[in-house]
Image (cartoon, rainbow, N blue to C red; front, side):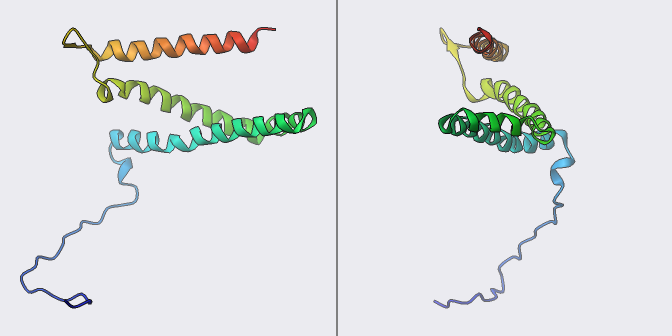
Length: 138
């Protein structure tokens, strides 16, 4: 067996059409898919900021106050605004994909997609309101 590549007379050559780096901008469904995948970066950003909060709390009140001042700068406010929009897009597309990923059957019949999506949004609303009540109660 030879280790080098060699020419085989009857082997077809691979045809690979050149594809632009921006191929995903040609169709809205592709653009939405790529944007959905990019939202994971902003979800990770929120997780890092949450861990940053916990770390600052562990260091004491002065460190936490410094963190809040830093997060109040215009750069961080804009960054969090952009991240919020992307995380909201991520959540909405996630809930809309749920009926395709999880088939719910009741008495042998498949539940309509709108029931699964609607129950996801209802649970999201209830949990968001519960968290808001807990955080805003003083």
